[in-house]
Image 1 (cartoon, rainbow, N blue to C red):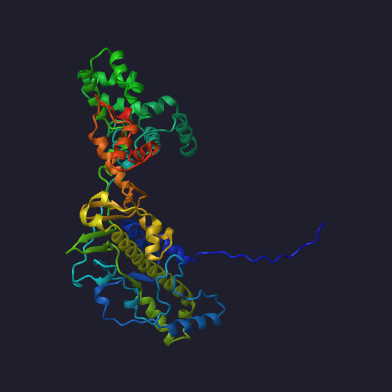
Image 2 (image 1 turned 30 degrees about the horizontal axis):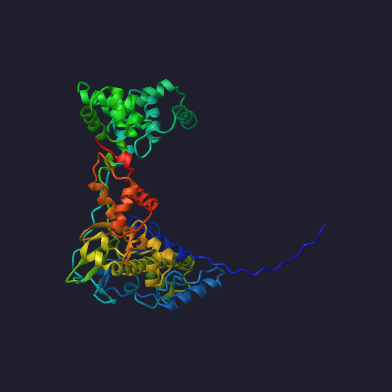
Length: 514
């Protein structure tokens, strides 16, 4: 039996503090998610509140000496305290934050809306909104019924029994976002037995499924693309010869249709090419993803996180913070601390000081994280605008420069992971449309003139060539490669195929039309 041994190991580890983790999570949120997060924090932490305009003349200060006095009193009682520090020591961002609490509550905690102006030079000017009395307008946010709620509402109007309702809701809950039922009926039967204690059989499930498939939109709850298209065709005029032919194609020759073997279809169906073309026109107007046209998804609403405008040949960058209220530490909590300072022997106040201090710490950390998020977003967006200046003036995708995360990270002296979080799920509103931030990042290559160009420029040319091609004889990747080489872009055929796939453009055979 070997004896016990003690070993001393020295290790160097990096650990994120709770404040750093909070800042990172807030940084990657878009405008809408940030608004929800702020609302949650306001509900969870009573020590934080919205700052009102008419509170500006109330003088409330929470001094560093006050905090130390409270700490000493609580330490004397044997309570373990968390060191009161507001500084968020983020290794990804060297933005200085307040380390003391001897600033006024309004100055420290109110979050003003700032805009950043980018002049022709490299300097950025921070200025406050011009009219402080301007009415605060909220950005409208669309509300919609969810896809499953929309189906449930229809189904509940046609059910005939409680058991049928339970089965139907189970099936509706099993639908994917695109409206398909990809879970097998025996598995749904098992789900009902284990979760709802409802015994059923395949025939009952099939009967309820047919009722659900009769709901809007047409094609909902299909188990395959073929069934989805047939469900939609059945709702069309069955006396129309083109609809009949389209139904025959989907029922018996769907493989030839999807692979665009039109000559084989004409031969099998004993029809001429014009007849086939009319039938295909019916098919291509069907929806292969019926879930996408539900009430919840009729429109995709995007709330831009930034706005870039051109004012007098100067690019103006603004952060959308309209729906995020100014925040501060609750004055009632500060008043409670002041009352305790005046009457330290008040046992009732002393018992609640630990709770109050923890809530104040949490409020301060959250507010500082919001402010640091604001600064980091603006710093990064200004760098992107400066880097892609020509695009924001002209709106021509070909003027985009090759730019990767590392380029912006070096420009603003932040970590690449920070830039990645800023670019994630955020949008910018420009004079030429709304773009995701990821749109401005692309790899580059060198053309025949020795100039470095973005691969977005190559993709643009590729898209134009395919849009202008004869659809009866689509251009294969080899021909597209030759066209690009003539324009000065010497790329391989496999690179053309890669860019085409990234653009969601099918191969030449599948682009063929009659």
